[in-house]
Length: 612
Image: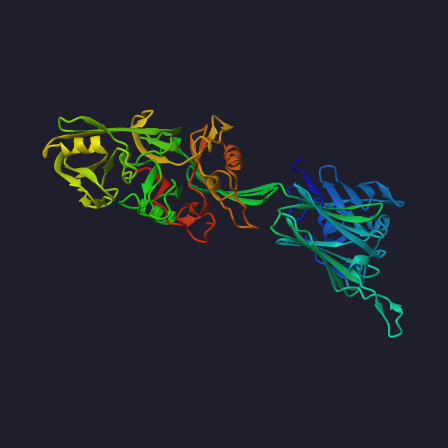
């Protein structure tokens, strides 16, 4: 559509035409209008030009129910009204009258008198300055409605053509029209008998309610007002940004057509190189609200970091608290964790310090020393050697020792806490400043202090216990912990998953990464991180579990959203009630718990010192 065109298919909420030079003859003041006895308040009033009433497309739409298209470049209008079409242009004739259209301030106006007469109405300007439009008043026949996967249609069938006024307020659209009799379809009227037992005319109901029962449609209510006047109200479960209202003939009908598929994006700049988009989507299953922060990492002003909630891995704080303590421009919740104790489930490394080891080869975020970001699947390899003893394989980091009789060696640091309490028999080497400080052989539950300047090597199983027990106090200790495949110069790392996008294509690895059905297959709130081809990082939060506001997404739908936002690589993080995104100190999304859930870590966009 050209910039010089103003298109109106009775789509409520569209922007009016403008931007064209005004004709020499300007429009007069607005004129009040009454249509079939009903006072009208359209978005654009009729105006007087040369003493005659003229109207633009918005008056024709809102007050009369005329579908109109105006082209200010050619000074022409196309009108449709219950199957009758009119082409309006300067010099054209309607009913023997020669037309002259007018422009004022870039808005095109048509003379109301000949237009009304051609459509079976009359229009007269009274001595009180009120424009009165009259037309025959038909009777309402029936209301029909149908919701498909993509649309909701509501149809009011009439015995003849009649003007109507349309108003949109939130989730409700109303049509008001004067009729010859109230709305009283046979299926909702109950015949009654007089005192002699003879039938008497049924009293029309004050209102008739139809339950649509759809994803979008809630109910249609037809109210009988004095006059008679009927008011049809379509009440939806959520707001749709636009809808078409148009008329048809044979039989005369008013049609309201909603598309359930829509996209509304409201962007704003947060800081140089950082923007935020509030995204509202319409889908077959309902509305979805998403939030996206995009930061340009190539500018050198920002970096991405994994920020812990506290000094111990299981400490939890809200994302907004973590963002405030770190000075983040934006932050989202990070990896999965155990809801009962807060322990991160999977890889966690902050500023080169290990908190937890990877689990099940799940997708992880990897941040290098130079700020580059990678998304990959990694496992963990580790070794520890106590003095001249055998080299032991490290099976875990900051986690409980197995109790099934298997052998294992686990490293416990102060990120576990100040002490590790055994659940059974185990042997421990307490390491301080790189040397064995003490060896503890526990036969039952024992509390082993974890030093500030070291760690504890914990062993279960006959062979590992024997090797740790043989360690000499003062012996040097060598520990090697590595990602596999090895990624050099990793500064921060955080496990999440599954992967969503790989090389620009949807690539959801939920089965391979062994996620439970409640994560893998439910439509839920979601958190994701994406990387674009032009060096930007995306933090995305999708609201969910809030009917009428946001339904949430499946993982496959989340992958498609990330691709639409420009991601060529993307992964998911913990979701559900944990989903949270803060932007410039404010929580951008609507957490499904009604408030932020405390989490053990967050992914943050931080200003580089000396930069932003």
